[in-house]
Length: 528
Image (cartoon, rainbow, N blue to C red):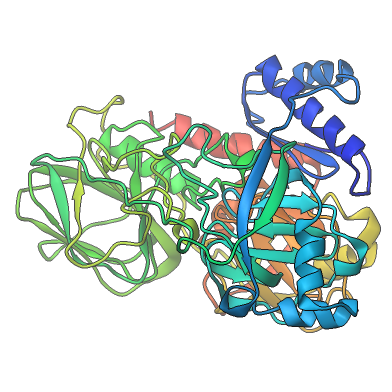
């Protein structure tokens, strides 16, 4: 659910959004997973199989008065401007018609309101810049922006908590840590805070990197002999932290993840390995009960074929391997007891871009030794279940959509999306599937739009007119229009698409979307 309260960057509107978000959180409506205030909107993420919409509506009817909410703090951030730390300072000065020293004086000469966090964990959107410093984003984003970099874009300024790609103009750097998952709260800046930059001659060093999570000790473990193409620890996601810019992450194909766990007797939330296209080679260091579900990547145990959606006992020293992919893109490996990596912010899911969760915040590597939880699952184990084949069922793959939050303003783009045929490009990742079509969905740039909440399954349209289907690792906020949203049930099919696969979209009703989701849930209930 998206609640739009305005269409401008305004402190009064933003205060209303934050107060409304706090009111919804305080209501404790069952099934509400996340409440995310942004510049002038509030996103409510909820489980439609649990949440009663009437309860949400009654909460919204009691909207708090404007101005209600927390009192912000004053946070001072030391900033070293220019030189290697601020490569765009000179360009900003030329565009403004002032000296570099004046740019520093103008940037550090006012206090900034923290409107929201987004883009990455702990990234504060601060405003409003002096009009003379308002500069558009870079036409071509940098591949690497150093942690602690201070950037400006349009009317905003902000600080990169981690090294990442980015298109903001970089004018300086700080050594302050913006996000620490071990702190309470993990983000240094909260929405509503006041931020002041204090010029300094040098920074103490780059922003501190988060320490890798320590592995738990124990004799039950799985050793990685070969990591495969891209293998990560995942669960059902890191809900409750999007307001601090933390992506949900979690298994892209939530059905296969849950089914694999149920086969070995785990709860749905237990951590599995999500493996992509080319699977890993794993050695069991103790007796283990294992199941794989999802894409058929030709799994074998000590040379014997392991059929998908089947559990098997592997003796200590036994080796699980994968061969040539025959169907789909992603499979899930569950082991009885789950992969016992330390939870980070309540989840074991891996978000590689911010080095968060999973096994040391990264994809697996040869030599990793993953701890396994104690045996004895919460659910009865099953030998085998009958499931539909995983992967692309037809050419092109057909994904059902609902109109997105920006559909009315981009009706032509939505029509072209439904009428078109698209190909998944190699630039796709867990953040989203990049798609190419015969022609752009829109013509011309969308400009520096106000950033708002993003949603799993949303189809964004870039400035070049190309669609991107957002997935679990998506940024929590974005400025591109979201013209459509793939329904939850069909995200399972999107997770199994490969570069080169063809995709078509078909509009459906909310009733169709609900029925499709309930059908998937019913299939899971049948295997309990």
